[in-house]
Amino acid sequence: MAEPAEAAELYALPLDEFTAARNALAGRLRKAGDRAGSDAVKALPKPSVSAWALNQVAHRQPRLVERLISAADELRRAQQRLLAGAGQQAFREASETERAAVGELVAAAGQALEEGGHKPAKAMLDRIEATARAAAADPEAGALLRAGRLVRDIDPAGFGGLEGVFGSPAAPIPFPIRRPQPMYEPPATAGEQLAAARDDVERLRRQLRDLKAKGGELESAAARKRDAAAKARAAAIKARREADHAERTARTAQLAADDAAEEVDRVRSQIERTEDELEKASAALRRLRD
Image (cartoon, rainbow, N blue to C red; front, top):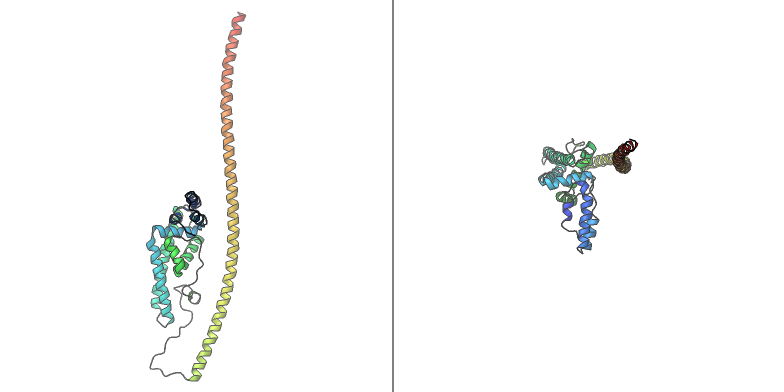
């Protein structure tokens, strides 16, 4: 389904204007006879607050997005070299560069949140950071980030599959990496090779067991957070409905107060006219009596 070029402009708008602008564009396209374009625009999802903040940075400061994607690419290359036996220094330097790029992007997104009337709470900034890192690690998501077209949070997929092993990008390596032996060392005997292979198998089994345990814990934590998010969304919807009801009640009460004030003014005018008529009638009566 074709999507008109004007659709890209929707994601640069303030978040509370997105839905109305999207529906208006869809209506214009339908009136112009572009039914396919209208349907495509109508189907565009409203971005989450965190995705919207990143979109604003992409539209306003695209260099920050490019810097993050470039830093993430270099970090992945450094990780590959590390596994191939290179030292940790290049990896740590790439980690620091990537961290700085993420920090600058998140700061800009936080500023966009404030300017848009949204509170840049820590949980929100954490989601923005996770989404930015995940987008930089995935070509398709990175293209959406570059275009300022993100619509939802993205779960981090790790850095080249190594984050689950190494922890955070700057964390110390928790196990020694086997490096190529110097050429002058004598070759290992068959018994030594067998012992080393057994050690490797046992080490990897322990590592796999630990990773599975950690994965189970993270899945449980994620489920709890999803439940909490669902409850929070339900509470927010309820609060918005109550606020809308209170606003309507307040408007109705104000209209009633305005009507009452007008009625008071009318009665006061009638009182003044009646007082004048009474005074005239009393004067006429006195003249007749005299």
